[in-house]
Length: 147
Image (tube, rainbow, N blue to C red):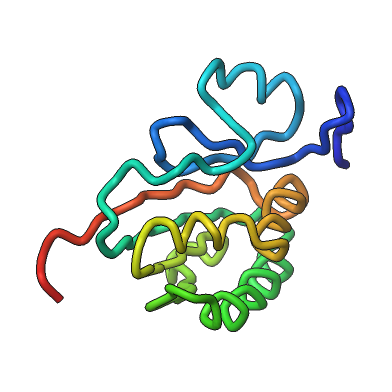
């Protein structure tokens, strides 16, 4: 159930000022525990404007594997149509069907930051408590080799 503490809707994404990946907070206490330097909107990119690749690990609640899979698959076509999206693939771990991994490549960090503001992506935060066992883990990678 969504928390409406102090007029702010939870759950929601929070972003660290250093430009690394954000995380979902479920309530005002989790938001406060992050400490200073976390904001509601992604900060301007501080990393290279080169190609950005990321790997996001999401773990479904055991009783929500099928619902999570359906929801995540719905993101694929929408995201692939976004400006700057090079690749956007969803994988399911063979040994543990509750584990889903997105492999994404974007022309630059700013395009991914914009992607994270899209309503269908924000829905992950809104449904995280319902569908996910833990907060998503996101690794941001800047390509340093030639393609």
